[in-house]
Image 1 (tube, rainbow over the protein chains, first blue to last red):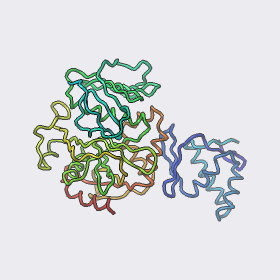
Image 2 (tube, rainbow over the protein chains, first blue to last red; image 1 turned 90 degrees about the horizontal axis):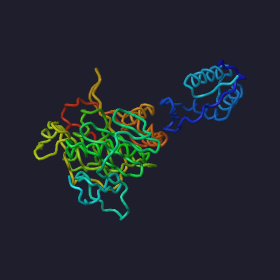
Image 3 (cartoon, each protein chain N blue to C red; image 1 turned 180 degrees about the vertical axis):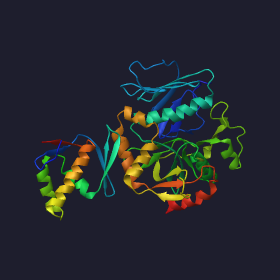
Length: 93
Length: 305
């Protein structure tokens, strides 16, 4: 599904999670795959617990992290695309 | 085979009552609780009525009961309640039956109780358990033997059982090592009088009954034994990337598919992530046939910090 600022994204249910040092580790039990999230990635991941509009997600990140709007948006879109490719989130138009 | 009452044994903190002698185990000296595990001899059907086949040798049913079939050794029915029934094949040796009871069956018992069994030999260094993991033939038991000969207690040989909850602790299995003839002779010992692991096999059961451990103890370190890849030198290196550590711990989980089939992934994940965040994990790269002696001091020094 193509991503736009109006898309709504949400985590898929039930990957197992734990913090190891600075890394947030996810285990997708169904796929048997581990994922490691760095600090920024896990701060995005935290915000995906409830469905959220991509535009709102970017704004909330801009309030926390310094950076140009366009660059943050680009990175968020790229990260969300990765999460979707790994079946970790659902994207709704 | 005797069915006379035998003294109860201690296995990973459990009280085990067995119809077959288990000379590997320390004697139970705990409270007068009923046995946690009971081993009987009896008939065992060829299949579980509602069993799911996990491998040609293992079925699990919806209640968590497991049936292990070992050709030329016997069938082992393992109930989650702790009742274990063995139907031995007539040609099986007593050592072979114990090999599978204290190996594959013990692994199954751990998974039924959502405990993480690592495929590791482990010894006591500096008051904690130090585990050696790695593919067969890489020298796990040999390293443990060398430490035992220096006076270190033996915590486990094949199956190293992690306790639930934190901090990471090991439930000692028993002080028996399975060793090839070379490893025994290289340590200036003789296989004479030792039981063979399998009939006709030059691998023996070496007991260090004086060197057993009763109580659980902290997991101090894990060493993954590896052959150096081309271009790598021998040495010890700590793993730092969490995903590398988790992948290694998953690879070293004893009978991993059994845990999956019993739905204990969450407990196993928690146990692995607890280890990854609190216990140092090292790669020990060495040629498997190189003398183990030179690594003992290095390992002990790293553990003692």
